[in-house]
Image 1 (cartoon, rainbow, N blue to C red):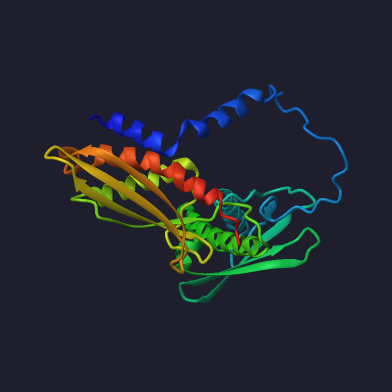
Image 2: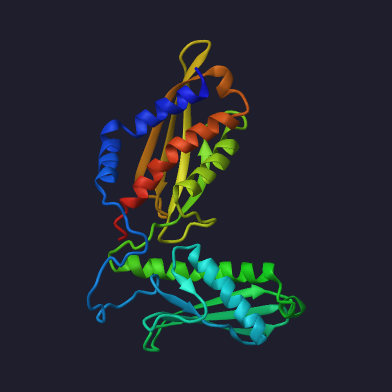
Length: 293
């Protein structure tokens, strides 16, 4: 059996025609869009924009030159956008929330960045403190790589706080992050190959990943069980479990198919790609059912 045949069978298991058909009909019934046409008219003066929907990043102040402060603000805005937060620098909307960082050296090579988020009315709504090991000479050099690293760590802390707040309010504004855990039971290099392929497939599917599981995120565990059918093939069953950091299971995705023994005992490169591409949409579907509480 070819790899493509294996892929088609897995896809048939995960995406039955009954699920595909409504999507096709929905697409066919949509009106033809008019480019940049105004969709609504009315009075929106009472709308309160949330921080995730509108954030203006101001230049970092404190122990930083003005040019470098603006550069770090731009890096922070970019890192926030990568985490589904609408952020920009420069001129914001009058209802935008304002985020500003203050840089202080607490010791030689010890940089503290304090990020404060304020509402459009000026009221502080959140603060995140970031401790980083940074040499003063590196800081003065305003290196792009350094600013990208600092902004990434700061944006992660801010996003984590926003997610905790959103989930505490009983709503899911954005998908919870997923940390890919170990994959058990794969022969030879299968576990490593499948982990690499699954990571790429989850990113392509739009699943937000995190290196370490936050307290409001999920961990994805994989397990593989192969049972010989005859001398030439094995029945392979794969289970992806989405669990919370406390160990409780939220849901799982199961895959199963007959695989040639030679392919199963090979280098797994092509097989891992097929399995991951078929399994990742199921993980995304589970995340979209997360009530956020």
